[in-house]
Amino acid sequence: MKIQWSLIAGLVFALITAVFAVINVDPVRVNFMFSEVNIPLILLIVGCTLIGGIIVGSYGIFRQYKLQKEIKLLTAQLAHIQNETGYTPPSPEEIQNVGKEKNEGELPT
Image (cartoon, rainbow, N blue to C red; front, side):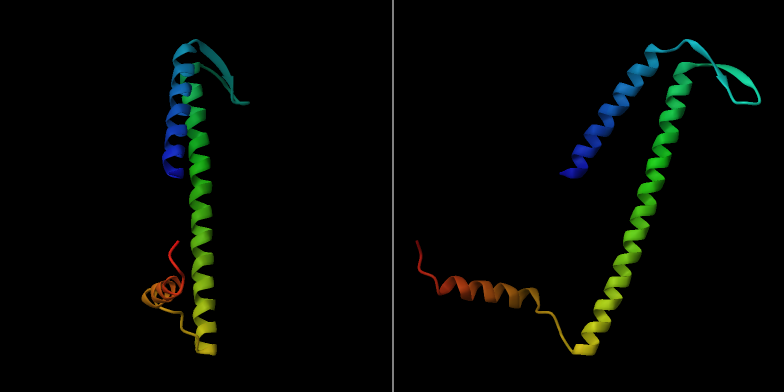
């Protein structure tokens, strides 16, 4: 559900940005320190929005990579601890059977 809300929010932001950009089509002077150019404001708005999207996307990819690396490290640590102690986690069937046994001992309400 979180992904759907993120997608909707992104589409609303894109729509607002597009409307704002289309309204502002006048040429503006941009100073690059070494030269000045006149470009339509719509290109400046869309360009800055794309640059911002690339920066945010790059940060998201970096964070995802970092979390995957941490998951691999923790999985290796867990496997090492399980080998050292001889612990084996219960299977899903065993967990379900324990839940059923608890419910059988209770009186129906």
